[in-house]
Amino acid sequence: MPFPMSRPGLLAGPLPDGDAVFGQPIAALQAAMAAGSLNAADLVRAYLARIAAYDQHGPVLNAVLTINPHAADEAALRDAERRAGQLRGPLHGIPVLIKDNIDVVGMPATAGSRALAQRRPEHDADVVQRLRHAGAIVLGKTTLHELACGITTVSSLSGRTRNAYDAARVPGGSSGGSAVAVASSFAAVAVGSDTSGSIRIPAAFNQVWGLRPTAGRCSTAGVVPLSPTLDTVGPMARCVDDLAALWSVMAGPDAGSPVRPSRADRPSGPWRIGTLDALFGEAGQEGEVSDQVRAALMRMQASDALVQPVSMALDDARLVAANVTGYEFRDALAECLRDAGLPVRSLDDILDGAYPHPEVMAILQERNAVRDPDGRARHAALDCAHTIRADVLAALASGPLDMLAYPSVRGAPVRLGEPQRGGNGLLAAVTGLPALSVPIGFTPSGIPVGLELLGAAGSEAMLIQAARVLV
Image 1 (cartoon, helix red, strand yellow):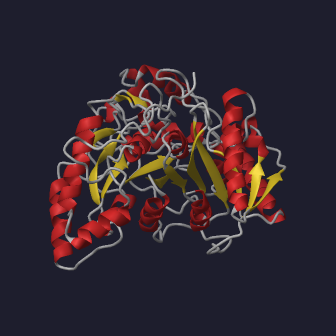
Image 2: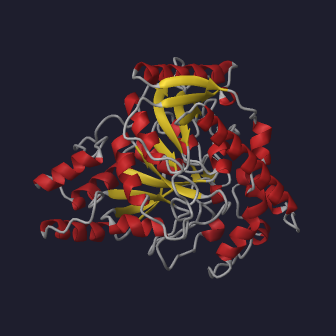
Image 3: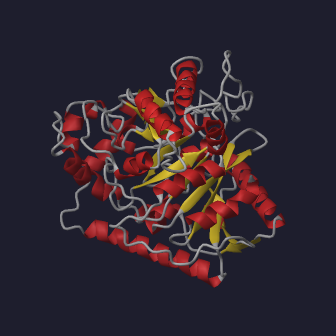
């Protein structure tokens, strides 16, 4: 069935008693606070009212797992600093939601698992520290696919999260809660994590902006791991300016990062874009999605971009062969749980206790069964990844091209409880290159579509700037 469009954003109407925050960009909120017509405490109350009205009532989107009990206190501090003229940064007084595999002091960090329900980190994740330093308020934690091991956002701790545009459909994942929360104006912006598409798939399905940064650009210290080689955190937002504001805070220099931009970000076009036809689908709903992406690229071309096809030997099997997640997950999780003071210390313990949601059990059992005692299989996958990266960089250089373009997801979000086919997220993941999912609307039959732009290492600002022509 086509994706219904009867309710644009599901939450397009204000609350009966007024709604100061629905759809409001950060710049407007900051202007209102600067003028004294609004303050951070007002914002916290308004976002909490939207969560109360729509997350566990109304459509029951189920995107917010936990509210920060100290959010009002944080807001009061930010308001006091504003009155004293002590603004911390671009997010001063702005409520932010954090995916629940990211550590926040004073709150659970469960990764959506009943087995980790009592996990209480003693330190903020590095990304949370940066947000606080810039004046952001941690409003709460969002739902995710259990242990980030899937793309429909279902877990033993939170149950199912629903798409912001159709509550009968999945939101994508694993950062589904963050995407739905942003689409629904439960906070100005949210932070997600991405291993092989976990930001970009739900961004496409909920028509928000989502960025996977260059590998190593953002610290993952304080993030429950899925694959240390591929894991990263990234920003999610309703509009490009909000994404840029959140990214400006998250992208601060990381002393442990070896990444350096391989080409300078250019301040303006004309952009040179290569369409990676191997990642376009042509049959049925995939054909509709491809047509929508090509139409968006034509709009970019009309704005002076140069768009040309790129021939590259690439298919799903080659990308899957480059994915090291299965070889890293079990050991990385055990390391994370080792000193957590929980009744479980390994994936074996989690499975033995029958903690996982039934829809997650099979993939966890599969990953627990992976054995690579001498590391050869993992190194073979890394070799595949390095070859694909070299091919992508060669394609960019041969154009010369600034970026590659393709659908974020080839098809449509499925109904709740059905298995979801993956997106095209592995390309950026295994190459370590940045990718931006741009919301470009719906097909004629109502399928939500994201256009993914992938560039060279360190080109996040260029990708954001290039995508502005689609706003």
